[in-house]
Image: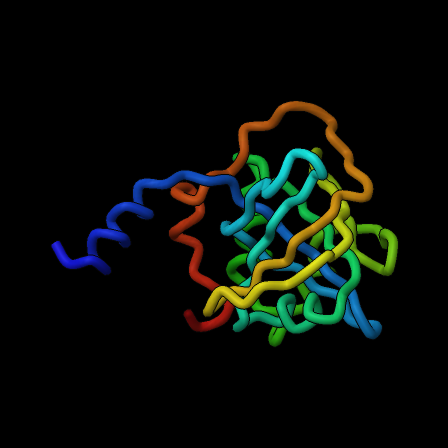
Amino acid sequence: MSQGAGFHAFVAELEYSMYVVTAAAHGERDGCLVGFATQASIHPPRFLVCLSVKNRTFRIAADARMLAVHLVAADQRDLAELFGGETADEVDKLTRWPWREGPDGVPILADVENVFLGRVLDRFDFGDHVGHLLEPMAARHEGDVDPLGFKQARDIEAGHPA
């Protein structure tokens, strides 16, 4: 097995939660489905979200001071399909999902039980994704949810070319 094929087979077995990350800067707002995200530190609390360099949310987040990270529940496939299967280069996703304005204009999506706002501390180029290291500033946890997993969402066709 080649090194590349072995690695791809390895990561294909991983299951991780899906998130919708929203951003606002310079009067623009957007959000996208994110699979590459993780807690990065306990003390102090830190979270890392990685945004594809090919989508509009990445371009807005490049100048954003805050991001909102929404945990997608397993029964919210419609949310995942909207923010993962549509591109804001063609569709205003935020007209299709209710939201309210949070700090720095960041959209906070309605009907998502678990969300936090994070101040962007740093950004890291990881190749086709850029990691945004967040310091949690506020959070809403309305209960335990069964998160939508990557394997459940992998058939959502990306709104932008891969």
